[in-house]
Image (cartoon, rainbow, N blue to C red; front, side, top):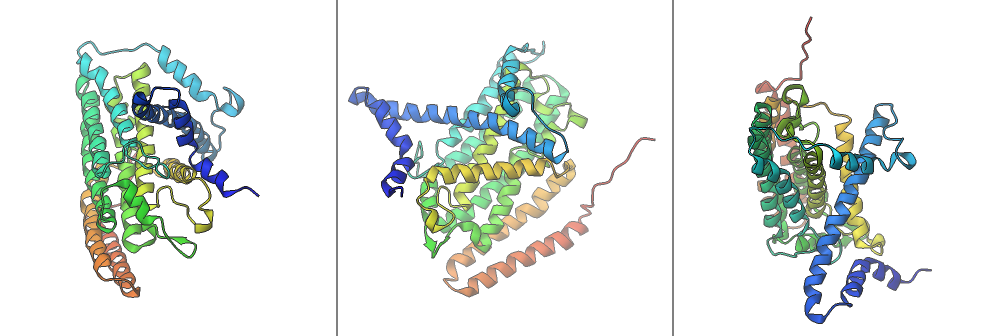
Length: 396
């Protein structure tokens, strides 16, 4: 039987590897070298996940649509990302003559750098966080807000009306749903009592019998997770909220005038943002690196974190292959007239949960308020506002 010390060592394998590597350096350089190795790990691991995810997504969508997906390059098509990367690197970098060349060049770099910075505060395992800030949640949202700047830079600098329109549409969408994203996280802060993501995970790392105390298993936590997931889908421009890239009316949106490696950086940034927001949702509502059942606590914590993140990515892919794209008016009305009011109500319910004390009463009261509000706003309010179903018109 495998000893407990083996699983403890496996949980700390990255720390042991880091300590072994920095042990070759002088003592004065070891702290800086440890931080540098952490940065290198993040920069290496998540682009690797990006490459694998593109294969799984294309194969998954192919399966949903009764086709094969990538199957030519390498075993089972798994070398397709390598071929795509070589193609992006060797393609000509076309820059519009009247564009702002400096801003045009900086836009994809700003997107990728700010997304990478968000990973620095995510606890990816027990004590596995690059920068354990007391205000880690604020830092994450600050870095996320910078992605809107990169989109505006790309659309404005291209000197293309389609690019500018796509950028404005994207910024309006991201600002609208970023408010919801932030407010859904406030409910977790109210219960956890901290802006530190590590402390939020620790607050959920306890069990009643074998069942965990994750926030998603409470009425306010489940409602907060649902609106967080909706807002995260809109923030990352994933279907059915992929309107900034609506090819039927915008060619390709804000990155219409990008080619070669610059376009690849936008593509990479979108997937990295998806990993990042999935990691935040895992941290806030799904217990972060904690095990789903108490008797699985021996499994290394980083396996649970990345497993939950990849499960979230699968849901993103599943939605892309299932749901049609919304109209712009439906998107904005849904944000400001349904999701945002419901999120504000959830803050009130969270306060009730906090001050009603233990017992069945708070479960009954909080659940009744949220279910009644969802039904009333969904069945009555949305219909009264004439947010009708999608209609199709075809040219004769």
